[in-house]
Amino acid sequence: MSFIQTYFNALLSRESTVAQPGFNRWFVPPAALCIHLCIGMAYGFSVFWLPLTKAVGITTPVPYPAGMTFIQKLFSTQYDWDKPMLGWMYTLFFVFLGSSAALFGRWLEQAGPRKAGFISALCWCGGLAISSFGVYIHQLWLLWLGAGVIGGVGLGLGYISPVSTLIKWFPDKRGMATGMAIMGFGGGAMIGSPLADLLMKTFATPTSVGVWETFLALAGIYFVFMMIGSFAYRVPPEGWKPANWNPPEGQASNAMITQGHVHVDHAWKTPQFWLLWMMLC
Image 1 (cartoon, rainbow, N blue to C red):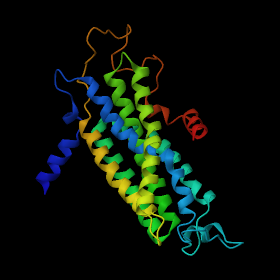
Image 2 (image 1 turned 30 degrees about the vertical axis):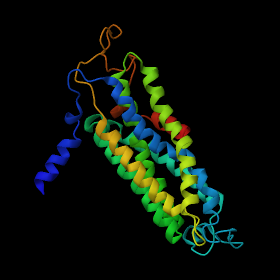
Image 3 (image 1 turned 180 degrees about the vertical axis):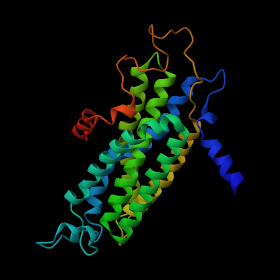
């Protein structure tokens, strides 16, 4: 068991992702897209709202009775959820995306993108699986915990690891590198929403709207692609730079362009950082 654990840890280590001489850096963007296209489905979750408002009634919603409290709605199994309650998923997604990105950014640089991508896949796809169970037993709090909280952590780790890796490989094209990563995150909903709609129609039965089955199917599909992306990651060797490119005078090839950057250890101890974080959330 210890041998397997040691081998697995070595496989996920940052050292194992260092590229060999002659590695083509253009193999890295597809790996980043594998991650971002999967987690980008967070933007497309509204495709589930209408079916989930009929998860109990199937054809027509079974509304909450008047006077039902927030806590009662959270644990109710007899009535359909309304869109305001489901909409909290977006809040949880992006609060935990921002929180995990801020808190684990330094760890990512030490652990490497492969381990970060692997844990991101476990969190995002595991969260979808938990949400699937939540829909199956009709417990809204499980959706919030699964996709919202655990999945939100997966979003944060999965969001920053491709961006930081691409910037290291493309110091001469930083804007393009960041744009490729963000394009994948935004494109996740464009691909995922039609896929989810197709799966819900496929899985729908007279007793199910097909959402819990779709969550489970998406978890499996996304896990495969995120694993491919994670293990395809490579980081450049220390001191690497593109051929025929010289960094701006006085700067290393992997440093931030600005000379006034603040280390994360100091940044998150300042009130300005947290005020900016709260504003963006």
